[in-house]
Each structure stands twice: as C-alpha cells, then as structure tokens.
Length: 118
Image (tube, rainbow, N blue to C red; front, top):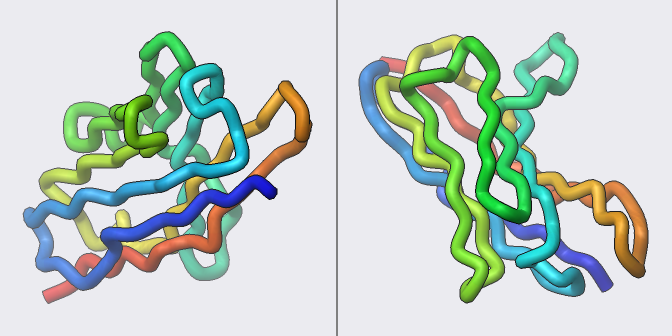
C-alpha cells in the first residue's frame, strides 16, 4: 500500500519560514520523481516544486528563490523548505508521486495546511 504523509504545516507570519516533510512508503522512493503541489481556497491545485529521482529540480515562478525542494532517499522523505513566506502562499500543500513502477499510479498525501498571516 502506497502512503504519502505530509507534516510541518502551520501558521507563520509574513517573512517567516516553514519546512514541510513528506514520508513515503510502499514505493521504491529512490527511483521516484516527487512533487509538492498546493491548493488555495477557490483556486486550482498548482505545482510548486518538483524533484526527479536523480535530484534535478523545478519550481513555479512564484516561489523561485524562496522555496527549496530536497530529498533524503535513506529516509524515504522529500522536503520543502519555504522561506520569505507571503500571505499568497497560504494553501493546503500536497505531496505527490506519479509512480511508474508497480503499484503504478498517481499518489497523493492528505495535505498539510500552511497559513501565512499576521
């Protein structure tokens, strides 16, 4: 059974930082591309950051220079370090993998709420 479990969300003031974690199980994590998405109220889910199995990264323009995605294959965990947070970063953040091995599928975590407010 594939599971992605996010943690690390919370309430933070503008300009602050948070570090999200996503622990994966049921997949060969080291061979998996991983992504962080977010969905704000009334908006579509959007890709925030992506990291390939060999460590290449890609970011949404809105977070470039502020967010960093990384992975620890020994811990089956992907991270999202978020700095200089803005109110418009407020959203539910989801971990995702489109797993091409068995069990093949598009897997999502349950999400973690990030709120940036005074």
